[in-house]
Length: 274
Ligand code: ATR
Image (cartoon, rainbow, N blue to C red; front, side, top):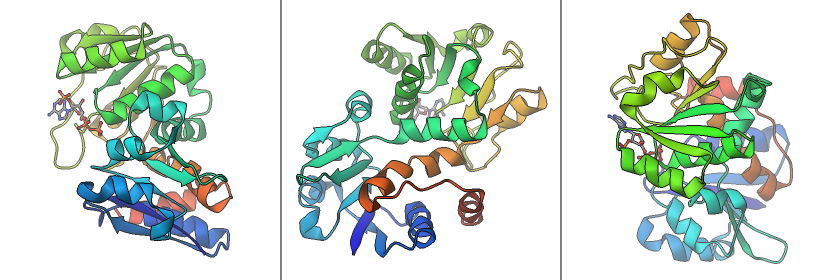
């Protein structure tokens, strides 16, 4: 029986066992997917000896994503550019491969919920400059966005990301956001602002074109204030729950050999558990 896991520390709140458990059952696969607490002190050794622990692969979450990046023998382009690994698997030669599927999850969600979202234009604003922001910038560049503005409370972090990703990415200060919004076709929030228990983003969208697609990686609440305000003024919006579901797809396919679907039933199941 093939066994996979989500690993991190702490790990109790992860939704991943529900997602993969749903797909295992749906496809009648005799496998298992569990939550495994892996403290950072032992993480590198753990990832290097997955088969000895009985796993064909695993997901990696906070605080182990950089550790998994170092543990993997082979990294794909996403992992290299994002600088963190959230999915590990052993290939047919037993080599430990690492990927970061957050960017693909972001794209999968938009493609499903707002097809042709990227036919609007090629200019985007990304709010935030943390780990999630890196994955999303990678994804937007992959879809051939040519001007990706990064706005962050701490400007230096946005500047660091812009120099990492090259000339198509431009760091802007938070104060410049208003005027930049007037030029773009796509807006994404990757900060924790707007999440339950966190302050609101409180962004003025007056300058944003009504055809610009607005999305948030925050999914609790499902409709953040940003999405509410955008929807009220007529912008197409996409919530963040699908990114969580779609980022799980490549791992399941690697470990269990079937490419699973993100269904509305799966969305409902996960929503009920939030
Ligand atoms: P993740 O991996 O989810 O991206 P992270 O790496 O901790 O998380 O990044 C959090 C992001 O949210 C950062 O861009 C952070 O801004 P700073 O770089 O200035 O810290 C942003 N963020 C978090 N709390 C914020 C707040 N109260 N106001 C503005 N930005 C905030």
